[in-house]
Image 1 (tube, rainbow, N blue to C red):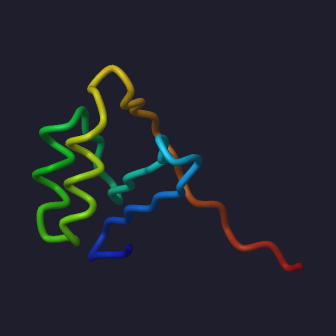
Image 2: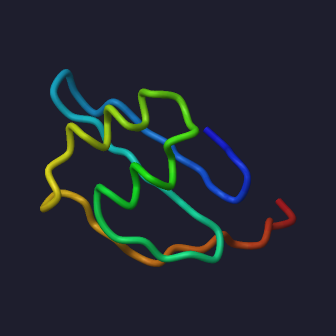
Length: 71
């Protein structure tokens, strides 16, 4: 899901596990509460996934996009 300056994606790994990521351009953020505030205008599924994830399972890293490659 894409929004203005932010993205959220998820993949079902098993019946009990989902991998998800949240990306905000030019901004660092921390744990669950900040994620809920930032993505409150996205589909409710985003907030449900966030709420179902224990804080100790949320890993915050800096990520960046790479320039497209020619092939």
